[in-house]
Image (cartoon, rainbow, N blue to C red):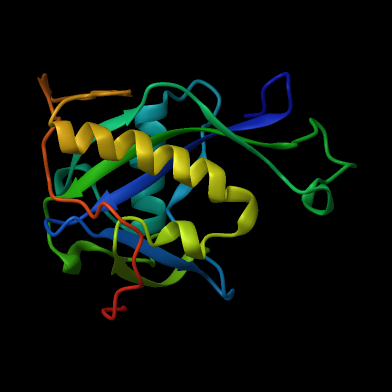
Length: 191
């Protein structure tokens, strides 16, 4: 779904493990790495879109994750001119996203990259919390910085501080989990 300003409505997913590392995945057939993300369909709320995308791209069902928090509002990025498809309608100039941070409650074995006809990713690993800022494509870097900063504060405080707590099954799912506080290198554990 594309809004009146030309932004595609989207959800972004930061999946964290118990060590505070985050899921980082390589796009299928490419050299670029990113967090799972995907569009919100017409008449779909962001929470439903997040769970659908989580399953389609990472193979995780809701029983294997816990929602910690989500961004308070939309975060936006614009596409570079060369990526804008001028002949498409409606014209999409970028994405506006609600970002979620989740904790994996299952195991690494629950992660499957083959749950859709055309898998989004072909490889994944756990990386330090700030690593994605040095590795994501340049035009997404600022929105990643905003999402990681806002959601990290919610995690560190154990309550929403600049992020909206999300209720899961009737209770607030905000938890304090360890996260890296400084950028560092990639993980050596790759799948």
